[in-house]
Image (cartoon, rainbow, N blue to C red; front, side, top):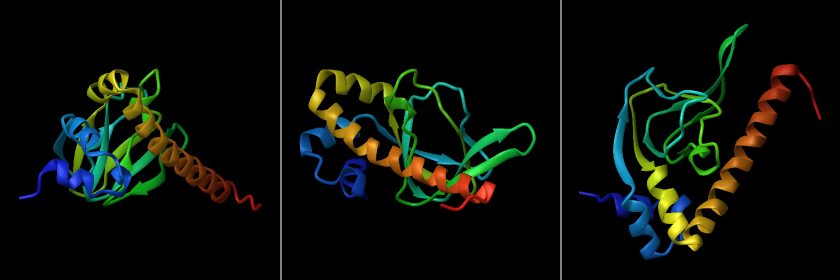
Length: 153
């Protein structure tokens, strides 16, 4: 049986995060499961978790009154879902909906924020890692908009 610490430490997101930090992060982790079509979070609601997707697919969506839900990115096994827990005002910017049965490791953002306040080095390590994800998501959204509006660079 694999432990949460082992699963987290083997993930590229946590690569080279020291053992003492892995213990702190693991203390904020739990296994979760989402049914197909279940919303994991909704835009504008309080953001207090992020997820490491172990199995399944999740659609990141925007809602448009004219078009309904628009999928801007689909995440799957190995992806990290959610960064809004890290940056005030800690509210979600998108909807996230499970497309399939989805299993993930949830990391409690409030727990991690407290640990980051106590150890700024941990906070810096997580911020560096999430900055990379935010950059990737911004680029993905930019490409989606270019596709949507037929603009070519």
